[in-house]
Every structure is written in structure tokens, then in C-alpha cells.
Amino acid sequence: MKIRFRKPEMHWQILIALVAGVLFGIYLPSQTIWISWMGDLFLRLLKMVIIPLIVSSIITGVAGIGSPENLGRLGFKTIGFYFLSSFLAIVLGLGLVNLIKPGVGADLSFAEKIDSLPVANQSLGQLLLNSIPENFFRSLGDGNMLPIIFFAIIFGFFINLISANHQKQLHGFFEAVFEVMMKMTMVVIKLTPLGVFAIIAGVISRYAGDANSMAQLFSRLGIYMITVLLALIIHSQITMNLILRVIGRVNPLKHLRNMSIPLLTAFSTSSSSATLPLTMEAIETNDGVSNKITSFTLPLGATINMDGTALYECVAAIFIAQAYGIELGISQQFTIVITALLASIGAAGIPMAGLVMMTIVLNAVGLPLEGIGLLLAVDRILDMFRTAVNVYGDTCAAVVIAKSEGEVLNI
Image (cartoon, rainbow, N blue to C red; front, side, top):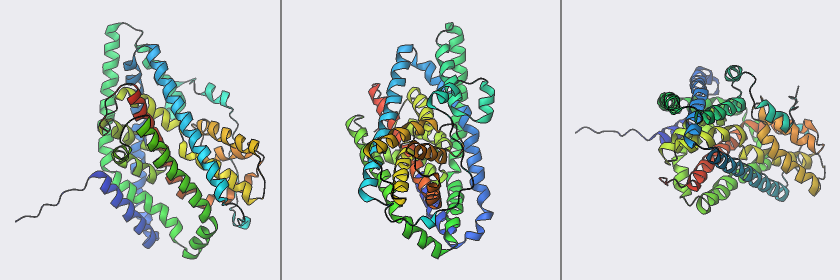
């Protein structure tokens, strides 16, 4: 009698790969150089499909929305949801960091040296102006997401204003392109366990070389890390799930289970954009959200909606103030909330976005920029968690907006 082994579902494969990567990084840190190519290949394949997927998806979705009134309504709901969820995340982080006070008594000698900081010189108005591309093809080549999204939305909208015959041809063409890109995405998804294994092993190996340094690191920054992680967990698993239950009237646990593949991938890669193809596939296939909604909300969310990052920036800024013994009044803390909210939108096309956002927030209330050196040692670990929360916030927005539009979902 033959024993047949059933292949585990993809989310279990990724989870097993994640655990295996941790063990490999701990016990064979010097060998990770031989497997790093798998992580690089996986990320390159994901990035390869991102832009054609986004362009074809947005154009198809916006053209399917139809009238300007429908597009305006959907845009208002999407932007409104993203502002609300980010604001709730920041306020939660502000409350916890003031309650726990992780920066009081922090060892300032532990700060890493920062050779240079990127310049954050874009105002919100300049950011909005720069979202209009001077050269669309240059934006495609540079991977500058805001101008690409803006052009795709405008192009999709104007398809509805041409003759019916040409509408049909263009709509059919971009639907075909989108279908091809989703097929390519499905193939890339099959490589996710290998990519996650290699990426996680590489990350862990950087910390596993010196056990004493690791113990010292977590003893000094442990309370800060716990504060950030606790805030991220409360926001994603209580605040966002309550929104899903009360406003969206769906089962949040079922939604969370359906999003296991993009969330585990976001955690491993620390990239909302790289995870976008997997997020779109999961939200449409598993939750049953229409392409009309996902093609508009998810690419926009991956670019401007950063609940986890905005929360982190707020906690980090207050932590630095506490570590340097600087008392912040209510007005200054309110400034941090507003600045973190706007900076989370403005970080879209900026390299080293998290660091740039931090400089904006610290400058707004006159905190020392060298305080960032306190956080660099654990930033990569926390980046994994906050990226997963960013992606989860995008998926929740898609579900809530789809329900508000009268769609019947699988959850």
C-alpha cells in the first residue's frame, strides 16, 4: 500500500520556510552567502511584475468604474479610510509610548554613528505636484509609483470618454495584459517559500554572529521593541479587525487567514510594493473583492498608506525625546501626530523612506537627529513587522470599501 503525502498549502510552506530560515541563520550564519541568490531572484521577479500589473490593473479598474461620480466616490472613500486608519495607528502609538516610557534611562552611548542623513526637502504641495509625470516613460523606468498611478488613473478615466468601439478595444487589451500579469504572478508565488527562506536566513545571520552583543542589544532596546510590537499588534488585530467587523460586517479571522501569503511575504521582504502582486491575487481570489476595487485601492495603499510605519515613527520620536530627557508638551506631541501622518504619505517616492520620515518628524519638534542612531540596530527587525501591518491595512481598506459598494464577499 502506497502512502501518499499531501503537499502542504502555500501559507504552511511559507511558514515552514520562515522557521527554517531562522534556524539556518542562527546555526549556519556563514553559509547564508550560498543561498542569498534565491532571495535576490525572488525579489527581482516580484519587482518585474509590479509596474505592468499596476498599470494594467488600474486602467482596467478605473475604466470599469465608469462615471466621474463613481470614481470620485471611490477615491473619497479610499483616501478617507487611509487617513483614518493611519491617524488611529499614530494616536495608539502615542498613548502606549507615553504610558510605557521606554526611553527613560536609555543608554545614549549605545547609539550607532550615522555618516549622513538623506535630505527631506519635499513639501506636501511639492509632492502632489511631482505626482504629475513630466515623462510617463521616465517614471516607468525609475519605478516612481505616484506619477505612474496618477497617469494610469487619468488614462483609465478618459477611456470612458472615447467612442464605444475604441473603448471596447482598449478595455479588452488592458484586461488581457492584466490577465497575463496575474498568470505570471501565480508562477512567482510558487517560488515564495524559497525566497522567504533565503531572505530570513540572511537577516537572522547578521544578528546571530555574537550572542553577547545580541543579549546586550535586546536588554537595552527590549522595552522599546516591545512597545512598538505591542502597538502594531493592537492596531492590526484589534483596531483594524473591529473596523472589519463593525463597518465591513465581515469575519476578520477569515480575512486574516485568507491574507496569510501576502502577510508572510511582506514580513519577510519588508516591502509593501514587492508584495503587491500577491496581495492583489489573495484579495480577489480568497476574499472575492472585485478587480474594480482592488485595482484602485491596493496600488494606492502600497504607495501612500503606511499605518505601521506612521505608528513606528511616532513611537520612535517620543522614545528619542525620552532618551535625551526632553519634555514634549501636548502641542508638540500633536505636531508629531500630524507630521507623522503627512510624512507617511510623502514618503512614497523617496529612497530610505523610513529614515527620511524620521528626519521630518524629528525636525518638526526640534529633536536631535543623531537620536536615530539609537534605533538603527533593531530597525531591520521592526521593519518586517510594520510592513506586514502596512499591507494588512491595505487589505482591510479593500474589503471595507468593497462592502460599502454593495459587493458580496467570501468572508
